[in-house]
Every structure is written in structure tokens, then in C-alpha cells.
Image 1 (cartoon, rainbow, N blue to C red):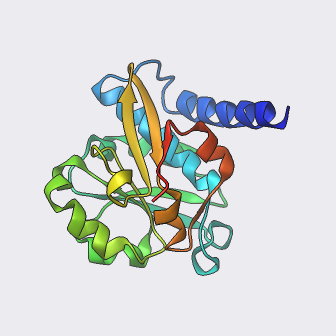
Image 2: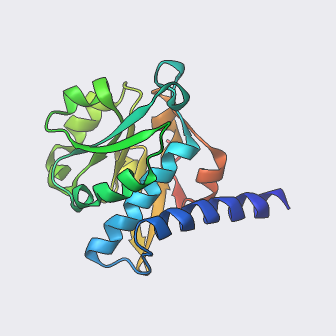
Length: 183
């Protein structure tokens, strides 16, 4: 009974974020990134950062994009989701070494696939949620990877990579993942 209720709540949160993102119904190129932006917005609710970076202690959050990605075209989703208590900003970050100083979430764009190992190495000890749609992202040490199956955006989550930085991913988010990496 509780699992059903929890799934309902998660589904409702994600659906409301998707509605806010423009009532997205299918995952073609540009709309796919609106769905991903809605997911990222909801990660803020289902991820717990260590005390020094806790969302409850912040009045603004930077969601950084490392490399080139169509996600950069979705800043309106984050502006619409901002409140008087918490402002969400999409920021382009050229240097992964600078990301940990101001970002809570780092989305690694597909243009960085050849440098993925180097970028993850720089970020692996930082309390920074790493997200990407690069194939095999979570398997290579990223925290949350996006994958598309049957025109639906799904999650692949690596909770061990997150916990190594002091980040805790809520069990409710793990339940909706298509795959949870346990290494």
C-alpha cells in the first residue's frame, strides 16, 4: 500500500513538472530535453546533499551544464519552478574544476563524451549531483543517467557514486529507476 502511494506521489510530482515544462507528451529532440529538465527539477526534491550544501540552507541553486547540450535551451523550466524561497538557475560551466564551488547539479553534455572519465575524476569527491544522457554514464561512475526506451525518458542511477560524495538519493527515486547500478 505504501509503495503504491509513494509511486503515486512521485508520478504526480513528475507529471506536474512536465506540465510546467509545456505539457510535454512525447520525447522528440527538443521536447525530450524539456522532460529531462523536469526530471532534474524534481531531483532537488528527492536528493539530499551533505550539511554544508543542504538545499534547505540555500536560497539559490545552480544547475550547471558542462559541455554542449540542448538542455541549455530549457532555462524557462527552471525559472518557472523557482519560488521566492528558492531560485533555480541554469548555468553554462566551461571548466569542471569550477563546478563544485557553485553548482549543486552538473549535467554533462554529450559533447564531453570523450572527456567523461576526466570530468568524473574531477567531480567524484565533490558534493555535486552528476547527471548526463551519455550512454553508460551511471555505469562509468556518474550518479544519474538518462536513457530513452520506447520514446520514454528513463533513469539509470548509481547510488554508490552519490554516497561516496555524501549525497543521498531517496529510495522513492530509486524505485522509479529503470536500472540501479550497484557498484
